[in-house]
Image 1 (cartoon, rainbow, N blue to C red):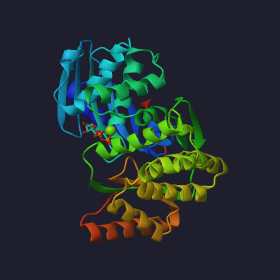
Image 2 (image 1 turned 90 degrees about the horizontal axis):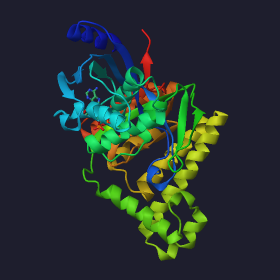
Image 3 (image 1 turned 90 degrees about the vertical axis):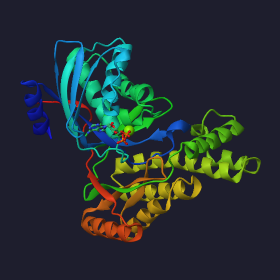
Image 4 (image 1 turned 180 degrees about the vertical axis):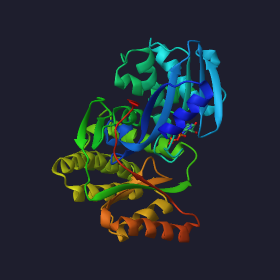
Length: 378
Ligand code: ADP
Ligand code: MG
């Protein structure tokens, strides 16, 4: 990947530049918790964006996307937004840096990646973090702090790409650390690293390649349920609720709202339980919590779908340590923690059975927890 990018840079621009990379991410546990002031627990993965960049002494940016076989050229003023949606991620990062008083000058760049696009591993955050970090290094002497780099990526999605995302993806891509996951408190924005070294296990994402809900409405409905229950409890978010409080108002709220809030409260506690388990190296407990999250998302939060429940059932049958829906639901991936000796059988079985049932194979992405955005020394 690095060689491909630098070779093409040489070909396009007749010189060499500096290499940067930033990863995609996965989330071990903590789903639908962000907007409830709870915890998420992501880690960076060994798939990312690789870019070679060199200031060109002009006020224009010239970028080549190797994967999309396309190129773009744009200025740095607000009115210079490029047409191509992929280039808007880079333009947005430049603009958001400038808006914060950072420095950006013209540069040449070639980039490529191996994060699958739109599979839930956050290729867009990888792209943003790679360029935000590079701009910080090349033009700002690394004076922009890392949290601000993540916010630059998030604001890029909001203001230039029409995606109203939270901070988790960019946070994980910037702060990722090999063999560690990061528990981010979505209320205080404080975070803590926990060791994640599942020796004897593999981490694998199984992508159903289905997406059922195109509209935002189910997501907004879940949020509304959570907000209603929090209001009834007289608290700001469900972060401050426990099951005793919820049970005390059970008869005043709808059954639907009750089960939505129950999932959120239990999920918050599960994240904390998983952190304790990781400190002990207890991956059986981690796995059990993953299955509990799946069941909660499926039965109480009702954001699963037939295909994801099928993937989860097959994982259980194959003796997989832990398996759950990853992401918002209604399609996308499951994340699976699998013992080494069961891995080949699981992949073969889940691929075959899913294909028999749904007429297409799932995509399989083994991942290793890796470092965040950085410059690559050559
Ligand atoms: P994801 O869940 O992978 O983040 P998004 O739809 O948010 O999915 O972002 C995918 C978009 O990011 C792509 O459509 C493209 O515009 C941009 N992108 C990501 N990776 C690449 C890449 N390797 N080359 C070009 N553009 C990319
Ligand atoms: Mg994205």
